[in-house]
Length: 121
Image 1 (cartoon, rainbow, N blue to C red):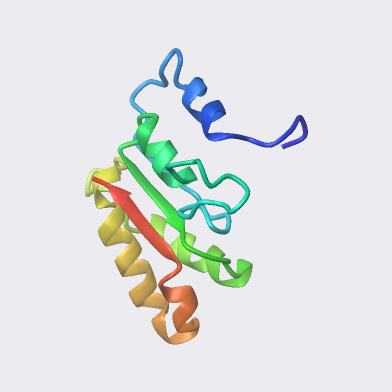
Image 2 (spheres, rainbow, N blue to C red):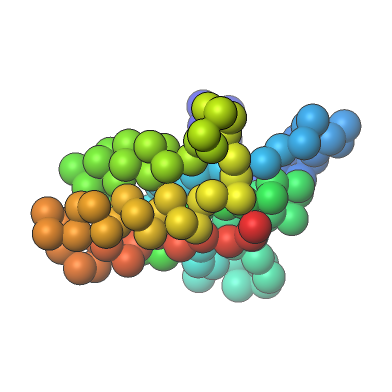
C-alpha cells in the first residue's frame, strides 16, 4: 500500500456505493484470519471484514504462508471453482479448498495444509 496501510474501515468504505454483488475473495497473505496485538480493540479480522462488507465467501490464512506452497494450492483451488458450464461459483469454495489440499497433501508440510480456512457460503 503505497499511500499507507489498508484498514478494515477502508474496506468497508469501498462498499459505499456497494460493489455489484461481491462474491469471493482469496486472501493469500499471512494472518488474514487473526487479529493483531497492536489493535486489540478490533473485533474482526481482515477475512471477516471482507465478508462483513458483502463478500459471500472468503478464504483466509491463520498464520504464515509459504510462498512456494501458496501458489500450487491457489492454482489447484481455482481448478474446482467453476461449474460444468464454466461459470465461476463461489458456493464451491469450501470443497475447492479441500480438494486442493487433498491433491497436494503428500507434497506440502502439515502446517501449510491447514493454514487456509473458508468463511461464508
